Length: 136
Image 1: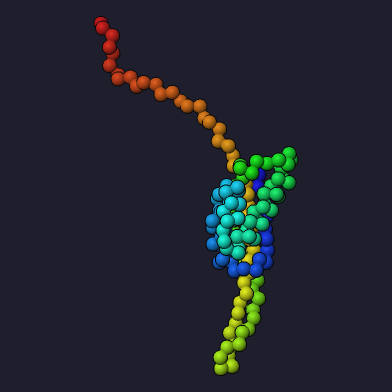
Image 2: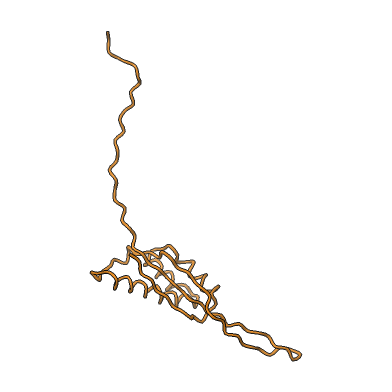
């Protein structure tokens, strides 16, 4: 089972958000929360909110309602570019510079790790040498 959370129109550039998202991709959900909580970048706060929302979405999808967060991991985390606000800043000699205020859309998908079942070990039989040791 999977759960997805999306935050759209975040007011930071996609490049800055990707630096933070790359830290948590493929990690355990608890570990990812710890990483985001102690990352000093501003984008980490928004990513932490989206991750908490994805965990909550997973718990609400589950019929029992109780899910062990230790079994969840970040299956996908990606950042798409959002719309740009275009502004003009005055420049020397009557010119104007264009300022592009970027935004992004963040999506995090969580999944539950499947516990590996222990396969029964096969016992190796000793190889025969091919010679008959019986006395005739």
